[in-house]
Image (tube, rainbow, N blue to C red; front, side, top):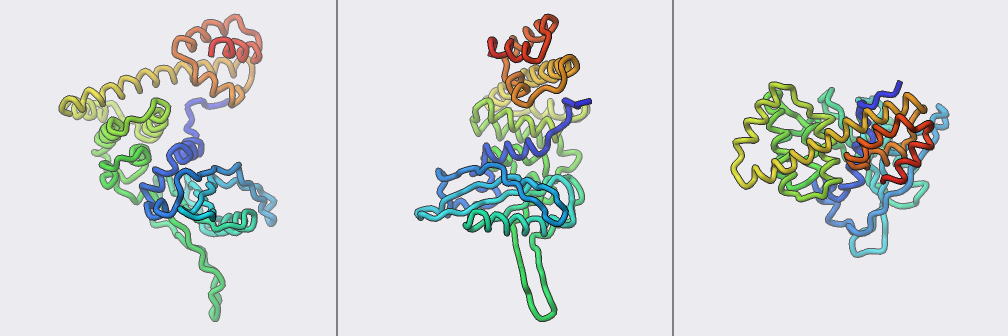
Length: 304
């Protein structure tokens, strides 16, 4: 049975990086943005490599083609997100580097983004092949390990990636309500459109779900914010709560459709998720009279 409440970690992080790629670099690697031409970004199609020894296919997470600032020369930025500790991660980064270099014939800037909560030991940022008389390979990559970063160092960064990823950094148990509040205060200063706000909210909902006791602390601290900042923050809170209610309806609808007609295609899930609250409620009633998945698709096409 499909779990509609399960967190799609890979999708969340890939969507965040694609939406806020320059902001991601500004936050963690500002030196790169100094020689990158911002308007030149091109996200390449999925890069899939076959492991000849094991016969397995591996999909590279994110590859972006960029132009050097003021030059007619290009390079690639490869970002690989890692949601669990893996002993051969550095070796895999080297294999991807070699194949991307071979395939595209341009320099590759490799970045490993470690997103898991534990372990918190430092992850290697190099792959080496050495003999007693010869160093054959020393391959380095940038390692960004979120569970070794303190959220307080990012709470005043006017950057949407900071707002999202604070929820995956080092947080003391007693600070969890404050992290959520500071994320909201940061969002109030960024003035993002609703779809980009929703992406940040997805991170908070997925990785910073507060208990009842924590919500009481959060509510007290929210009320303590001085006006007019509190009014701006409350507007975001109200919008997000309304969207959360709509997401609950989407979850229920997709479960019902799946139960009656089989697995819901990904593109149809996206179209359902973008229906207004009123249309979601109408679809819930219309389901009683629909007889197939194609009927659902036709209904949505006329009400989108």
